[in-house]
Image 1 (cartoon, rainbow, N blue to C red):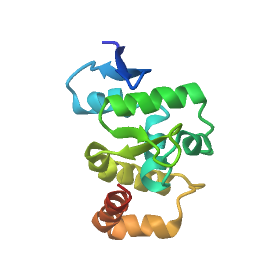
Image 2 (image 1 turned 60 degrees about the vertical axis):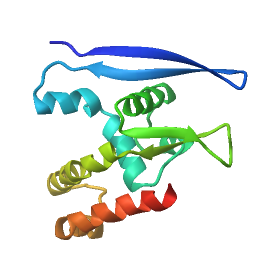
Image 3 (image 1 turned 120 degrees about the vertical axis):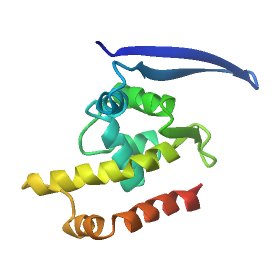
Image 4 (image 1 turned 180 degrees about the vertical axis):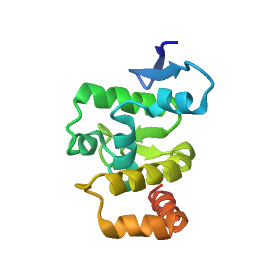
Length: 159
């Protein structure tokens, strides 16, 4: 069964400004839990966007663009839209610069942290050239729950 990408367009008219919001969701190919997860964030960029948001404190489009993997602007826009449409992130106007948006994780993203950390552990174990700092990986192995609590608390304070 093929993944079908659907886009729902909502038009909002407020204060004389017309905005178009694209709701990027994937229809699911099956009810297998692995297929369900891959349909949402199984492309090559979505987990990297979540990594940057959750671990590297990137919150603005330009900050995501500066990641070393070199994502293109159109792909980043699509991934942010999909992650927002799936309820993994929120998007709000920057209070200091109304032309920019701030992205923030939702509880759904926080619920993914254990899986993301396990993927990180696996990768650090099998990639001899891993960029993961050894001290961070030790901390994740020795106190994963405390590490997760610190990440969640950082966003609670920023909110």
